[in-house]
Structures are given as C-alpha cells and as structure tokens.
Length: 140
Image (cartoon, rainbow, N blue to C red; front, side, top):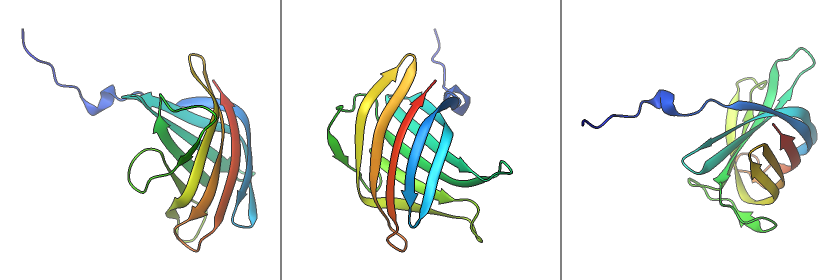
C-alpha cells in the first residue's frame, strides 16, 4: 500500500453563516449580518464581512482560534499564532491589513454541528492604534 499525499485542495472551503455582528473599528460602525467560517486541523477561522450598499467589501475581520477553546474565558490574542485576529480595510486607498494587538477574544458559545459561534473581540490595531470592539453571533 502506498502513502497518499494531501493536496491543498483538501482544505475545506469556507462556508456561509448569518447572524448579528455589531461593533466599531476606530470611529466608525462595523455592522453586518453575514460571515464565513471554516474548520481545519482543529482550528476555526471566522470571517466577519462588512459590505457597502453596492455589495463591495468595506472591511473584513479574520479571527482564528482552536476548536477546543474554553468557553466564557478571556483569551489574549497572540502575534503569530492562534488565537489571533486581523482587520482588512478593503475599501481604503490603498487597501491594507492590520493585526489586532493587545486584544482579547471571548467565546461564549461554540458548536461545530450545526455551526454556531457567539463572542466578542476587543483590542487595538497595530497601525494607528485604532480600537476594535466587535460582538458577533453567527449560525450556519
């Protein structure tokens, strides 16, 4: 029997989720009812996507954490490993991506089947020290 290599295509595609996402990034409102999620190698990735009225993406918040995360406990975000969070300003000229630093992630609810996640992300960005304060509740 020969060993089989896993291809990058074996990574599951992101799936749509809906719910309530409310908060602020800097001095503007971040609000959406849609997001995406993925689970791979016991790591959960959540994408919170705020869109303009025309459907183009304004900002996207990426949050990554372990699937065995402790519920109802504040987690300090790490610079290069899980848990971590990034904010993409896609509508900016030029578009840019900044990391959330000095931040905490609080997961209140997590279920993988069916998918549901409820939590809060609070911190600042590493660029211009913009405060990030977002509450999210997404379901598949």
